[in-house]
Image (cartoon, rainbow, N blue to C red; front, top):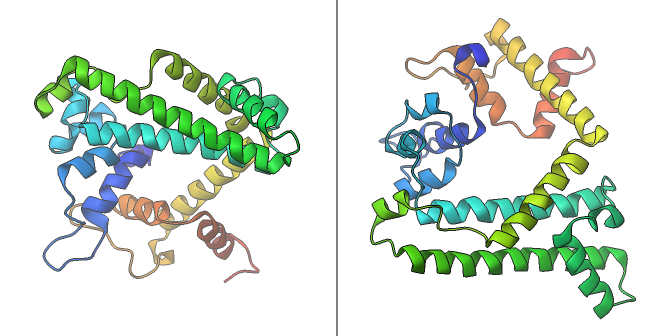
Length: 259
């Protein structure tokens, strides 16, 4: 999509609720409130922010989003990182011994093993991850309360102009950064994950070019919207696919054994 305006996943999420959802007779989209839309748009390039309405303003003026959006951002990060820890351990891409190099994990792992020395490894992992989440959430609430008390914003404008009010304490921020750095190195760049990522990129790229080269391959309900090029409609279609559907569609198009 680089030659057709690019693709940003956060912007695509906003596009889904603003344009692509078809629920109401009078308008496209879901008619969500500003705060919800702002919470969805966590990141955005300056070029795309210039094309948006008020929701893109903060990326142009270096403003903080609403408190609701700040909470959603870090709540998502906590859930995302800890789910990946659990997923990595369950899949065998990570080991408990390797995870113990991360302070946030190691401290809770020691607590669990001391409290329940006979506990099975799977339950040890569950208890450890559960405690990590609790520690992060508790710290986030306490530090956010302190930040709001310190800056005492009276309106949205003062929230936007202040430093990020929803935040971890300095110590917890460092421990969370260590966790993210570990996951990036040990999980997201694991050779098995990199192989799957390469396959996914190849699948998406070849689906995109197949549909662009011959739009007749698209289902009849896929259509261009007013003033938009076919590549954007194709991107919308592919972005809405689940992993399994994309794989099946790839096989239907490129395997002589699938129809």
